Structures are given as structure tokens and as C-alpha cells.
Figure 1 (tube, helix red, strand yellow):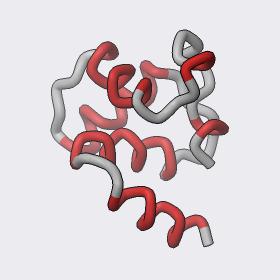
Figure 2 (tube, helix red, strand yellow):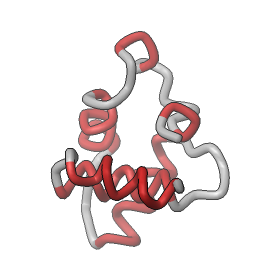
Figure 3 (cartoon, rainbow, N blue to C red):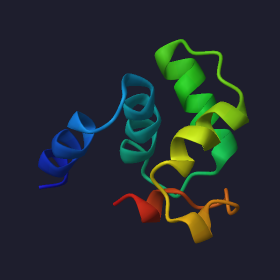
Length: 77
């Protein structure tokens, strides 16, 4: 079921946003912004900085949660 939801959500995301979200979806634990950046850079050959990833996340997180970069995963699943 989650895989089907991921595919539906991925259709609405840009390629870069999809990479960020896949890093989150593939994790087996809550991730910090630093972990998401590291996984995107190492797993997808990117050279993104934390601000780049947080910009993508900001588009998909409720506005009140944006400043909190410690726990992204629960807000996406």
C-alpha cells in the first residue's frame, strides 16, 4: 500500500523532490535534515547543501513544522 501511495505522490513531485522523498521513504528510522542531505548526495550523486533539501521539504511540510528539521519522516508517511 505504501508503495502505491509513493507512486501517486511521486507523480506530483519534481525529479529533485522525488529524490528527497525517496531518501525519506526508504529509511527505516526518523531522519534529520543532515541524514537526508547525506543520503541524497551519496545515493543519487548530488552535491546538495542542507538549504537545498530544506527548500524541497518546505514545499511539502505544513508551514508550522518547517523550522523543525529533526523529524521529517513522520510527516510524510
